[in-house]
Length: 296
Image (tube, rainbow, N blue to C red; front, side, top):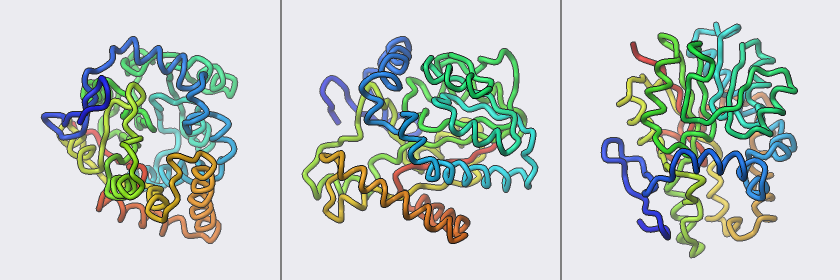
C-alpha cells in the first residue's frame, strides 16, 4: 500500500504493518519534542493535557481498568510495585497509579511534558523512547506503554530492551490503536474516505490484537489477556462522518465517554471490561490493550 513517499508493508516475522522507509531516530525524537505535544498537532491528538483534563473521568476509568487487571494478575498484591511508564507524556496515568500506592517512574521526549510531571513531584526524566535503561540499571515490576508502540522505529528492539529492565515475572502493558479493523475499513468505504489513520511520521507501525499478541509471544512474553475500547468507528457506519468534521468528532467522542461513565456510575465497570475483552477477541474496538508477563 502506497502513501505518498511511504509504503505500508507487513513485518516479515509478525505481520504487523510498518512504514517504509523508516524515519531516523533523530527525526522521530525531534518531531515529538517540537510538534506532537507543543506545536499545532497537539490540537488534534489526545496527548494534549487540556484534552485529558477535560475528560478526566473518562481517562481515570481507563487507568482504573488497567489497575484492576494488574491487581488480578498479581493476586491483588501490587502496592509498592515499581512502575515505569515509557513515553509518559503529561503523566496523567502516573498520577493515577501513584495515588494507588505504586512507586512511579517515567520518561518522555517532550521537555514541556516532563517539566509538568516534575512539578507534580513525579520521578520523570527527559529522554527519547529508543533507550529504555534511563534509570541506570533499575529494574521494574510493571512497564507500561500507552499510545507509544505505534510510534517506534523498531518495536522489536525496544521489546528486547524492556526485557532487560523488567523483573522476573514482571508485567508489560501495551496499548495501541487497533488499525484496519473491520468497523474502521467498512466505515471508510461507506463514507468514501482514505486511510486517514495512516499518518507517518506520527505512526510508524499499525497493529491488531492478533499481530500485537503474536509479536509479544514471539519475543519472550506470555500474553495474559487483552481488552479493546469503545468501537468509535461505529459512528461512521451510523452516518456520522466525524473524520471530516472535527465538531462532529467531539460530539461522537462525548457520546462514547458518556457510555462508559454512565456504566461505571451504575457499578458496571467489571461488565464493561468483559464487554471490551469480548471485542478484543474478534479484533474490534478503537484501541487494544494487551497484558503480558516476561518469561524467564
